[in-house]
Length: 338
Image (tube, rainbow, N blue to C red; front, side):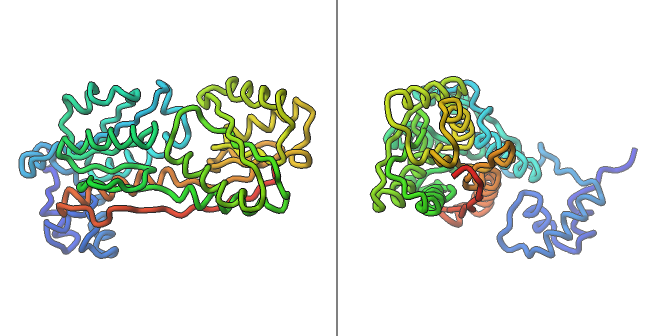
């Protein structure tokens, strides 16, 4: 039986120390040049090196597992494209560094009783939280009591939470830029179709829309819906159209909502974009399909997951987060729907 390659063999092949190999394998970037990292990764591939998980755990008192708590009332939380991309980025980065991901969808109010809080032995945690700001802060404080480092996605920093990192994309800036590009329509009535469930990213998007549109005299009206059901989204928009004059501009909190709005408006005899302009948010791959590509903003959910994983692994190695807050910029995606 061929002998299993060791970390010493990888170090010799790459011409570096075993400590440098350990850093690269564990995803630690501090103090490692890009060219060095590339050499180590090539040596790992060439030799077929796989870290001894049990040995690593005994040496470092770690379990090489990161927990992810998604507080969402929907049992189908992974059906959401943003959530699915975030989880993929997080899981793939962790897996490439020899860590596993323990994922739990948790209903709001049930965090205390969850397995992730009560029984799991993870090295660190990531949080993706719905609810009001007050509810989200309560969840963050509860996690902080566990004494483990944690990353919070799509949230602004919270005071008094020391061993935490907050990573989000610039939803407010992206929404403001999108709305500014639509001012040529001179909209006076604007509907923003939003989830009944509060999410911090949606709060930021609405704030960005207000920032750009209200100083120009546009009146924004929020139309809540059950975003987990296409039928429920369509019913909410149709009911609002029956009771009110149509808007000049309809903004969906995401592209799924905007795409459904297109169909509802057409069924009601309205022309898009002539009568009503429509725009969405996220620009995941399906956005450009159909006869009327959506105006949108390209989200970076996958990159958020990667950034969260990298920050948490670096914290485990260095003992503190290098940055308390990270904000990823967004990109406008032009379309013909507005």
